[in-house]
Image (cartoon, rainbow, N blue to C red):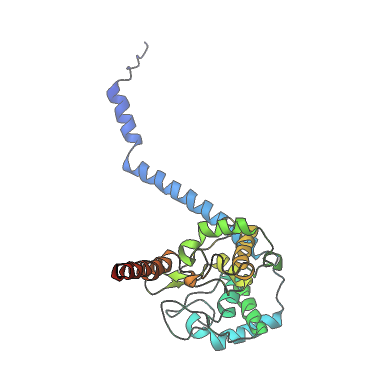
Length: 277
């Protein structure tokens, strides 16, 4: 005796499809997608961080020891004795030598007082002390290293660097690199007087509100071209087209036209109207 198979009806197919599309299955798919995306992002970020840290010469134990002593005396109050951070300062584990060289080498750290942003000020350590501090922090965990000299010579493609600067930097730093105001009392500093090494380090560490431009965003040669454009604009060309009016762009130029240009036109019209026939 043979068992006959019931034909698959539309109702049966709909019920099986509904079982496949339960909320649990949807949540599982979303979770798997988030895990895959997060894992891929972590792998890429780790790879770029490791690549940035490559090439740095190993620091001497004595330099690291001296850096630890300097850190304990000048930085641990805010960043903790083990650089793990406190309520007054962030963790420095994994920031790398480049972040320390930028922050300390521009005088931003040690910070004088809590404020919306740490401004540049006279440097408080000599070059050896800055290097030792950077070596100590770099010894805690891998992070971006101080850039190689070959990318700091300002001998790249200035035209390409200017294009990259306009795309990635000008919205905050002004197209002329003169800086500009941001929200909540913060600001983008001017770039004309910044050393090439600190320009590069800012791009790979993202200080303050600045985003991080790792090698996946801007290659080392891209960064070198941007530095070339900034140096060319500030050191080679000087001011193009007359007085820069503070390099503040259309605001200052518009005010100049309104006050002096239109004012001169009005004065001329009044003079013509009051002349005797």
